[in-house]
Length: 249
Ligand SMILES: [Zn+2]
Image 1: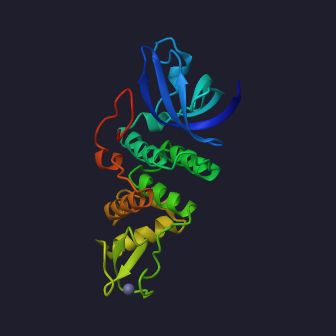
Image 2: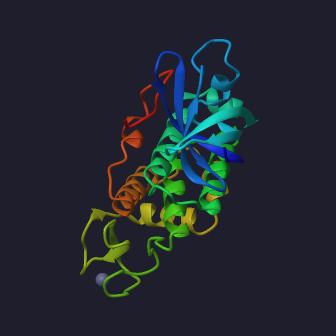
Image 3: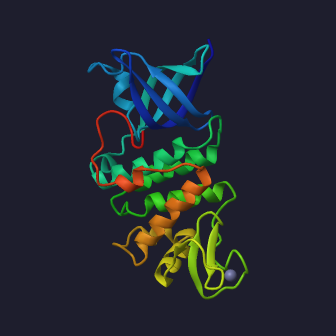
């Protein structure tokens, strides 16, 4: 039996048989894996407590003949109390794990794992507001894949002004002659540039900065275009999470 130890973010869980749970994890070294936690739904289970959506955990796993791993031991790396105590933060976290879950199977990418942990840590920091965290995560995920949207000049003709539209499929902003995609205001463009340009920590401290709704919407569209599937969690952030399961499934 092959055993492995890794760190992971819990993306999704579902019930299995009478008392078991299967958790989908994004691990640091092995990408996305499915893990069987035997007895995890019993109240006395030590596995179940840590294997919850948005958990940041260390895991000892045993490989089986199939694609499933069996959890031997699970421990919190951090308990994220501020995140877990706030529905808006939980909702933002769900939007993040949904996008991670949409990444191709078999992709092991430590940079993506580290980005995910950084985002959970940000959501757990009371100094930062959660509203723009999913958008910034989507944009960084695209950047890691070499697909950061072009925001300095029109993707079609290269003109630097006036930029009036964001084209998710085309990967960036467009001028008034080449307009396609969603309309982009000056506030939206300025905020998009700040989020992409290293000013994120300041942006996340601001209450509802101008252009926030636009940036959220266009980042969501860009992520959907890149991942090739709809992301539903961001559209239902007002819903309270269930005790079991995950968004968008
Ligand atoms: Zn143009």
